[in-house]
Each structure stands twice: as structure tokens, then as C-alpha cells.
Amino acid sequence: MYRQMITRVPVVGVDGKPLMPTTPRRARLLIRDGLAKRRRNKLGLFYVQMLRPVGTETQPMALAVDPGAKYDGISIASHKQIELKAMVFLPVGVPEKMETRRNLRRARRFRNTPRRPARFDNRRRKGYWLAPTQRSKVECRLKVVRELCKVFPVWLIVTEDVRFNHARSRNGKYFSTVEIGKALTYFEYKKLAELKLVKVSDTDAWRERFGLVKYTERKWEQTPETHANDAVAMLMGITGCEKAVTPFYVWRKLQYARRSLHRQHFQKGSKRPLFGGASNGTFFRKGDWVEAEKAGVKYRGWVCGLPTETTKLVGVADADGKRIGQFSPKKVRLLARSTGFSWITAA
Image (cartoon, rainbow, N blue to C red; front, side):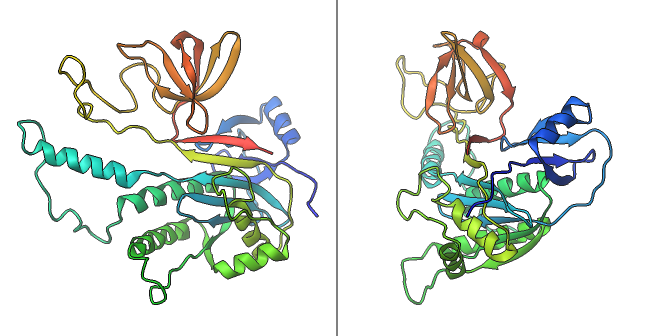
């Protein structure tokens, strides 16, 4: 049985340290009485910050991460119940972008144009070298965990330790880069809280024991049954907390076209204009969270296109990256500067 839905609002102190979450009613009263102010972190998570010193005693909370190749499952729990469930869309298409950039860089060496010299020892770095694909996933995963630890008093981080048996199968020739990414991730986790590793078999056993559903197909669907339930199972098995109907969040890493000298193909008039980048000197930047209005209807989304010489309109996309439409800059209101993530909240 699920506990009755008790949505909690994160609270941080005057010094920014996370405190125990509170109820929405109490959060409204604190804001009304001038004891706290509204805040929103880089994941779009609403919380309140106290304006006066209060008690700093907290109860232990745990955070679970179910890592994947394209999607991550996240969950946070107190000693009583699950407080939050989420799904993270990791960056994709990095190898193709690196290949394109490498080909353009090599082609520039044969032309009279700005270029950097060839570097054949670019992997000789101090400590470790992490492949760009793994680096993008590791940095995205760490950013999510760090932002959650800033608003929740997390004492324990639980993660599923995915392993590969090279002796049984030989198709994991690139898994060594994953191991480097895992080592770096675990090292950073230990700076935030105590770390506990869980086997995949333990997660499966807990999920069946507590009656949690998992979809083995259509893993891109934005529901708790795809990835978040694995994180919930780990927390219920380790902390002994109960299930609860809590809000479900979907966080997606925003990806833009990298700034280039010009477009890859010649344009009309034998001139290739500048291409890519997150800003062009105008007020808005790509990734800004805005509210746009057209024909009396208001939309909320993220800036995906900026005014240019061709069009003076601002493109706005939804949380999935699909463009809603183009709007006049006068009809677009800035809500928050770009944080690198888009978000969806669902019950």
C-alpha cells in the first residue's frame, strides 16, 4: 500500500545549508510572514530559504541513483517515506559531434585560416583521461546529485554498481572508459555523503519484494516505472522507508549547436555565416526559461532560437526540446536564466 501523498517543500537556512523539508502550507505561511523567500534551483525544484536563523538539527535522508547509458533514475527518501522520484535524460550524440569537429579541424590545417597545431599527446594528462562521451554523462549526473544535495540534507548516497564480465563476453571493449567514469563518480559522491554500492541482483530482489513495476521496453517513456522505481527499491531495501505517491520530475540536459567559425556548407552568395553558440548579443540566451504569449495564450518553455538578420523572433521549445513556436521579443518574459536543464513535473 502507498502512503497518503504528502508533498514536501525543501528548506535551506540563512547560510544556505539544507534543512528538513516542510509542508506546502507551512512554506506559504513562512513566505507570508516574511520569514522565508521563494527560491528555485538549477533543476527547477522549488524551495524556500529562511531569512532568520532557525534550528539546524536534521534527520538523515538518503539519495539513490540508478545509472544508465541514456537515462538515470533518481529518488530521495527520509526515514519515513519516499520524498522525490525523478528521471534524467543524459546527453547523447557526443561521438558524432566530436567526429564532425575533428574533420573540420583537420581540413583547416590545409587552408590559410586560423587553426591549432596537431597534438598527438592530448591524452597525457595528470591522474586520468576520460572519454568525451563518458565525461558528458558523468558531469550531467554529478550536477543533478550536487543540486539535490544543496536543498536536501543527504547523508547517504546509494548507487547501483553496474559491472561487465569480460571473461564471459568480449563485446564490451569500450567498458574500460565506463570504469574510469564510475571511479570518478564514486570519488565525487564521497565528498557529498557516505557512499553505498548495490548489486543489480539486490535491486531486482527488492523491486519484486515491494511490488514495484519496471518497464523493460520503451525506456524513454517519462514514467517512474522506467527508471525511477529502481532507485525507489534501493532506498526501501536499505533505509526501510515506505512507498508514497510523490511528485515525479523529468530533467533533460539542454544541448545546443556548438559555436563554429561558420556553417559546414556554402550558402547562397558564396558566404557562410556564423553558426552555433548560446548568445548573439541580444537580451535572451539559449536555454533561458521564459513565458511567451501569442494570440492571448501563454506558453512556458526554453529559448531555442535567437533573433537574427533573417528573423527578429525568439524561438521557444518545450521541455522535450520540441519547438512550440516563434514569438515577438516584446511578448517574451524572462523567468530564469539558463541552468543547463529543462524540467517537467508530474504527479
